[in-house]
Image 1 (tube, rainbow, N blue to C red):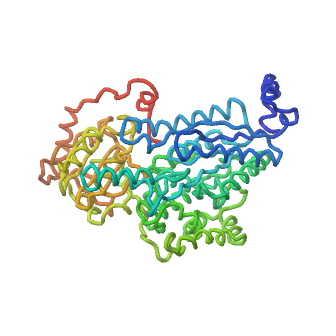
Image 2: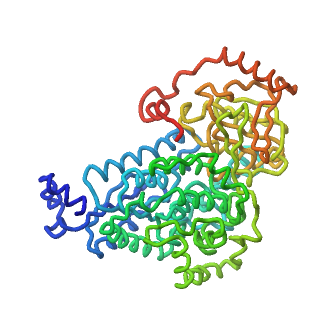
Image 3: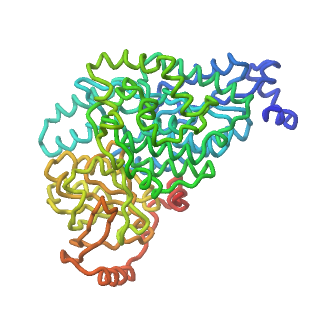
Length: 565
């Protein structure tokens, strides 16, 4: 018996309350399908999701289900940048997941369609799917069009830094701002939003070929309708999310992450999603899988093209085709078929021919966007986990976006206790070649783990600094960030981690090939490791915890209770 029907027998108020919304007696007997979206007029990634939700609902109803629209609107990391609003970003992921759990379990549904597009909403829904473990399928809201001359939003941070340095006029910056977002959808680069859309398909929870479609294309509406139909089928089959998503699924996703040079924020999100599925996935697993992985995708911010071109080149299926020798092709998906079976079906049904109709309009070849496995951009993945006396529990770097000059370097520490002070120093030209900008007390317990987006843009937009300094933080970066940035340093400063003990002119060694991040000198002079440990021990005796930045409210709860998955 369907779970919804079991609950009807013990909850006598349910039927009359549903009939009060216009449901018929026949509707009450049908599989109940929740259509959960982040629709709201909050940003371009969610503003168009109502139409897609309605298409999904129509699809579910056409296959004998009864749909119900629910909403848990997300915030926009872009709108939250540059002020304390960004501190709410990571906390919002957990809050959305909690609300979906409440929606699903307080009323009881037999299956669900989950629609979202962006940085925290996609991982939030994936977390919730694992937690509630019902038959579930995701639809992502796709990617926005690029603006004139292929202008995309991640360039605005660079242009803003250039305007503040006097390199372009205010009028020119205004023009860029007016033209960077010409449509709905996620921002048109492989940032966290685009990465997580791709991860949802790589995990097997989307219809094949539907992640990161152009938000303006008609096929996206059709994909939403088909997802609704499949949800009704899944409801009767009892094929729940945990029966589909396994350790193999997560290994596939991390391999795809390497191939696309995905956002470093994925190292926060995928482990949290895995935990909800009862699976352990650690940063060390990312490092292991990325080693010798082939990096293929030439899309911004690391590459040349806007993210709408990803679908034109064949999307996730084309990536999976190219790296198929490194994937678990027997992993199950929401189609009820394996990854390998899905790929075969797409080849036979003309999926790539359809994508080519878009590709031809660009004048590019498919391999200009998605390289072949044998001619990759790189062969050592795209992210690395560094460890040492500065980061005993690890730190993350997207080495594919780091200038080669900074893959092995020793820098002078310039510590700052918040991002605002650091970016001001960069823009004043107080930061010089050979410096290591340390931004601390910006981790999850310190301030909610905001993105250091504007600081990274100020550095990466300055050719001299980008090739001669490093930025090291217990905070995180935007998925749009590029340049010599090392984040997620753990333990964080708020917990008394070694990053809290760094002083001006300490020497920091970065060795990406060797996976090392360590304090190697004091006061500008190299010191033996044992001597450094004694000095850090003395500093630790004098270190005192800071009072909570947020003693109450959502951020008070988040910063107090956060723990790494």
